[in-house]
Length: 340
Image (cartoon, rainbow, N blue to C red):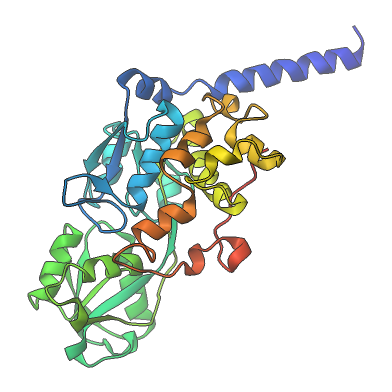
């Protein structure tokens, strides 16, 4: 046998082993066997994961879970939601209580490297801010020296707050609660002067006040908070499925593919759209899924822009501008790798 043939054989063997390893994860098999995705969400945060008036879970984080179910099971409704507070969320994922955590969770080095977890993308680029009563008479976070601050335990918010006040030579009194609902109740009851959290969460929590118009969000953004879904390390197959389910939605928006036109788009002669919708190529097969996996996500859940607008954007009560979460082609930084 020639050296060339030997090399080809060796490369093929490595490729086969890599392919076998890529499809050796247990989570996909477990999800298919039980027939649903077990998804960890918040205990109730409007716009992200919150039961509506009929008790149905809605929000960006919920739609991420639905997208995964649509990709894997062909049905976005095949999800069971597990409400988790900030302190218990990682343990629930590590122990296998949930298959994926989709719960306004910030991607950090410590969480990436020390908890046995992998972040699978960014659903919302956020940053920490401050909510105050208009009666307090302040217009800047620099005026908060000596303030009592309501904060949720087990979050990156605690460290960011300490860093910010230390850096600016200010003091504060932390008032710590287990859930975001408790923080807003504490704020409204006057137990603190300020409520701090991710800005998106502040918009949502302000809606829970008896008189939202009496509170204002200060202009300072003191941190980077990339929020996204999380999976356990050691199961690359499941990691890829969760990651590419989100990337498919972002790519779909960029290509102009929506839940309304996706059926028409199946006849497109654009190679990128053909690969996305499974009319050409074997993108689904590479993930261990059917080739219409992304079609199912877009048809049943929508593209990223649809998901954003109905949950936190102009079609929602929060009415948050796209900002950083606009596509990279429209002045934002939302960007997904190509499907090819």
